[in-house]
Image (tube, rainbow, N blue to C red):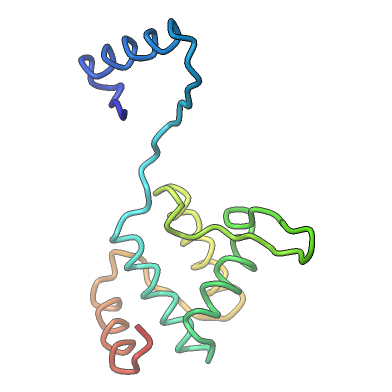
Length: 143
């Protein structure tokens, strides 16, 4: 069950449910639900990743996996290594980021793009610039 604890009625329902589970000596998992990255954030991210790719000659996937995740944001994405036969690195998906993590990852990438590649990436409120990027990327079949 999911309860919104800022709502007094749902908060009481959650307390009642937890007490019942405790009385039954049940095994429970309590998880805080964080707001996942928004569709707008994801769309914006793919526009700036695509623009960076078109400006540098990398593919969109190379920019996303190698630069955005591994070089710019390893603290947010790297989950560690697994495997007894072959060691494999695990990297989080952007789908698993909450809105704050996604905002931080995007800002890190914009800073990196400007400082390291000399490429200005527009902010989310620069609608005309973003529209031009979207048109260019669609015409060149990048997105």
